[in-house]
Length: 246
Image (cartoon, rainbow, N blue to C red; front, side):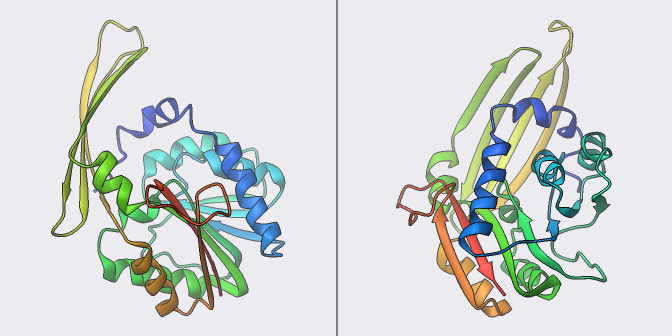
């Protein structure tokens, strides 16, 4: 199911407080720390191209993909100016290219949307296969702590100009799946609103599960940090960033 069908039209507005330039700068810091100078980058689950824009603007040869046609349409509007950027429709588990890359990147907890451990293993195996020797894989996850305790079984409500939404959550400790039930009301004139509903599911992975899966795929080095830093994650860290070297 294309869970971002209607959501794509609101995504950038809802994420306007999210600093993608900061995320881009952090990725470049990771490149420097690991002595990587990538020429060819693959971005998985690129969404509407917010990070892709900074990568393309820097001059990297970038291939980016997403499963949602609606999100890719928004990405194309931002990225069509860049001759060094290619946009495709593929999914994280089964993507296939006839070339390899110096770096593969996935941001904004996209990996959590892989809710089956077997598919996570397939994804990491596929990433390993598409990386050059000594290539780098950078991604982040919503932490187990965040999905269980902060998002948990809570309800969030936001009312901003032109958009009102409720976000009801349910965390299943039997399978570590966090289900998000979102109801949106939006209208450009602030008077006449249209309703639509979305359901999203993320899996809460422990650090140990992710490291084990990466090692099983063949990565020789796996490091992880409290996001946007090079500090060890804390018990209450909400986002954890992983760096794996082939």
